[in-house]
Image (cartoon, rainbow, N blue to C red; front, side, top):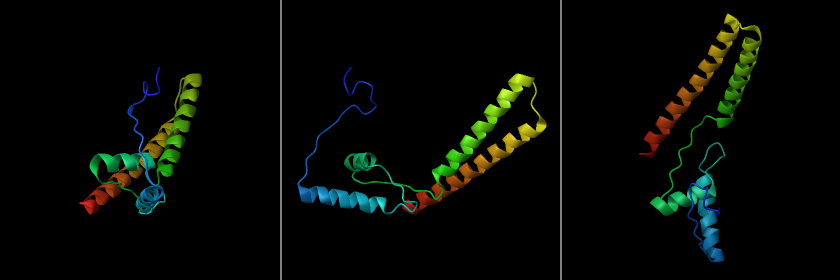
Length: 127
């Protein structure tokens, strides 16, 4: 099977630059990345694709760190696995265990609400 066979984006194009042109592209990309308050930023591929397809790059950055979401999801997943293992072994789940899971889901829900509100504010700023 070819390189493109299993890829979502199966069209690949070669583009060449002079040294000066490439330096300008890199400077523009770094300038765009520098606007990200968390220091993250979109990949060069995503940036270049947006710029070529639409003539501009729109990156909306929220203040909530994705690492917080990943950590919370990992904690919830770990607790669910522990509760499921215990439930399978004892055929019983305590009210305390259920309450712990509910509290973690509530914490995750709060993070998603803050993320959504922050995203909405950033969208309004861009318009």
